[in-house]
Image (tube, rainbow, N blue to C red; front, side, top):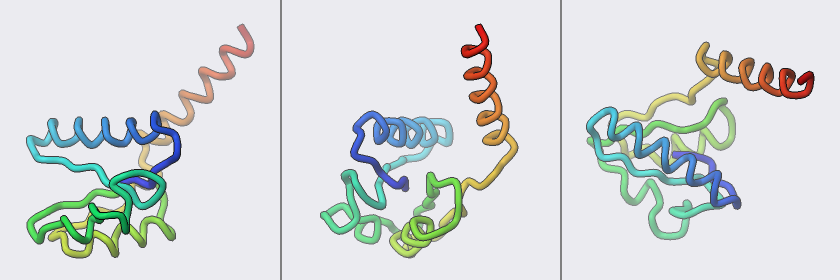
Length: 108
């Protein structure tokens, strides 16, 4: 469950990650959004309407807060709801690497 954006390419990233995660785990994976994109909460395919007790829900959000709380509430029917991603070392590494690429490009 991701936040959603008005930019189709941004939502495609979330959908792609969902598909890759499902394939890697050998599981059916369905992407949904908290707002700004379909399936959008309140417009038919709400997570609360489709999450089954045997489902696992994993928010694609970095930090706790309003949207993480909404994800947890909407996915409450799921047997397991994961926490947000947080500041895991792989995320921090990637952010630092991206910044390094920018600096290297600017200095080139």
